[in-house]
Image (cartoon, rainbow, N blue to C red):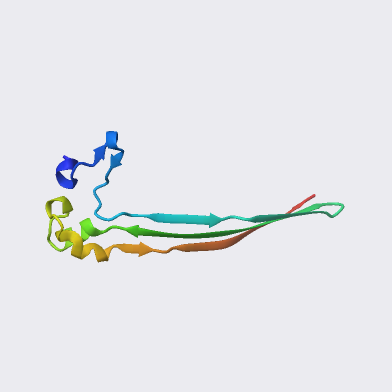
Length: 110
């Protein structure tokens, strides 16, 4: 039934797999996780400190065309609309989340 709504989504012979979305949804995600470990023998005890930093940046385009069409009372299946869905493509969302933080572990072994 999916092919009736979105067109033919799969042709393994040609290496084609379509997910039914109108727009491509590229995304990029990269992160860094460096750490530093320090150890010191204090005679009666051993001091250990481990510190790490996490930094992640990413961006993604999320296609809400099907939702936008349904929310405006049109068919959410662009396959039925021909090129009429193009006016809603500007409503796709682009996300640029960024996360970063430090972690520190301090231990004293006796």
